Each structure stands twice: as C-alpha cells, then as structure tokens.
Length: 164
Image: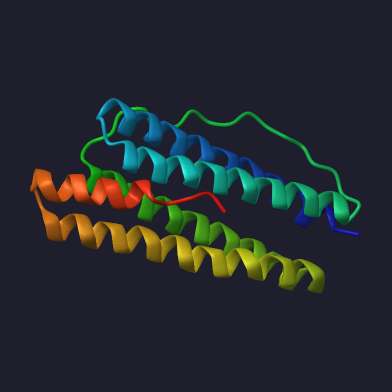
C-alpha cells in the first residue's frame, strides 16, 4: 500500500507529465505552422512519450491500492521562437522534470517505500536520456547556425524518429 504523502506527490507528477505532453503538442503545432514537419514529428513523439509516463505513474498508484486524483492541466506556451530556442526550452523543462522525479525518489526513501524507489529508478534513467537528447539537438542546431540547407537536413533527421 502506498502512503498518502507519496500518493499525493505522484498525483502531482501525473499532472506535470500531462502538462509536459501538452507542452510538446503545442511545440509540435508550432513546428507544423513553420513547415518543419520533422521537428513537428520529434515533438509529437515526445508528446506520446510524456503521456505514456503519466499513464505509467497512474497505473502504479492503482497497483499500490492508491487513488488517482486528476487536476486541471495548465495551458502551455503557444508562441515560440527559433528551433534552437525551443530546444533550449525543452532542455530547461526536462531539467525541471528531473528535479521533480528526484524529489519523488527522495520522498520514497523518506517513506521507506522500497517498491516506489525501484519503480522511480526507471524515471531517473529516462531523464538522463531526455536531457541528453535535448542537449544533442541543441548542439547540432548551434553547429549548423542559420544555414537553411542544414536546417532542412536536421528536419529530415528528426522526422525519422519513431514512437516506441
């Protein structure tokens, strides 16, 4: 059985994961309007991943005989700048997610909830990957600069990403 304190914290994380999904979907819509379908694809796949993360947490609460309480999802930004600016925003967002997951893990340790610690380890590992992916794309975009041809090639590369 999950403690009320940990259950409430996971419910907050579910909300934040759904907000993350919504943010990525908003970014995907922006890229579509910029005719950058590869960037739109990458952020849409990310939207799907974030929804999956929320559902993984959702299921875990029920597996531990807890209750899920869904709250309103905050409206994400709808105005964005350049692709590199967006990916810098993505990195900053993922770093916030990492800090929230780390706090959840610390709470699981404090509550002596060993099952939650093991469960949350997956999310810790996932965040290493999320931050690395954003950093790699930022580095690529900074390297290519303002070259339209290189941006088109980057768009094609990001368009190849498939949902898991």
